[in-house]
Length: 346
Image 1: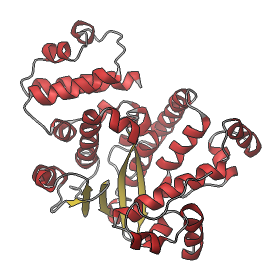
Image 2 (image 1 turned 60 degrees about the horizontal axis):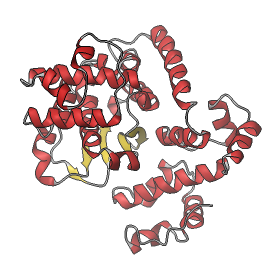
Image 3 (image 1 turned 90 degrees about the vertical axis):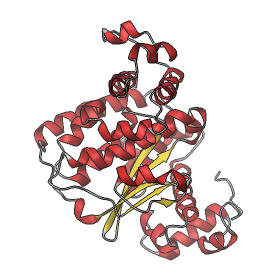
Image 4 (image 1 turned 180 degrees about the vertical axis):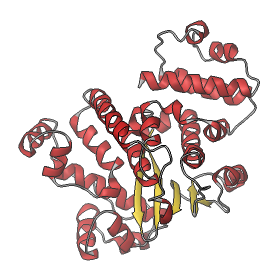
């Protein structure tokens, strides 16, 4: 993460200069050593310094939407190996899928999920609630940056100007004017999620710079980097992160998740038991969280939520939801958000 934090610092400072902000002053106010940064020396940047950097950049540039505008102008190179993977993917759908898989190399403030439905696909940014509350300013600007970046960087990779069918944001509607311009969608809908919904015809749009051989090398390198980062986390957290990032693929079996973690099912289950949990409990926890999230958003009928979560039969989803929460999806909706007698999973 340190490497990418430093890359973002360079990108942020370069954009601040365009906004007539002194990079030296910006670094000083944020507790960063300007000389070390200027010489591209080795530097460890704390989360607080990153948060202060965003706050001061927004203040000194007199731009409350600094992150949104930075995302509009940022290049793929700022994302390092993740940007290279996107650039060398074969299609827009493949690029977004890989971006979701490796976004944790760029930020741990939120994850990215890509799901396909009838004649559409949706890109969602799923917050890490604890980190979002701890660093709300940088979280807001990083989310805005990512929304704008998805829209504008893809333009340079395909032969058409992509526009979303719907944009959903949990912001005050009075702020939407600039978002409508940058995200090319009017009106933007106020909702309890950060989501961009596109026509499915864009999914297989070929990327001009695609290079499958290079992409394979980059994916191997990114996987090694992911393993290095993930080894520091408890296994149950790594699995939950994986399940959230790949929610659009459905929840895999124990054998399937073990294969993704280069382990046998028996060994993976044993390691989880040492951490006081089973894989079934983790899978149910993710399904329950996603089910409640989609239902409370008010944007998806029960049948569609069932489909998104990988259930072939609505009855199977209804039984599972009642087991998780003590009530059916329909009754939960009638009771109102947060009133559905939720019970904790074991």
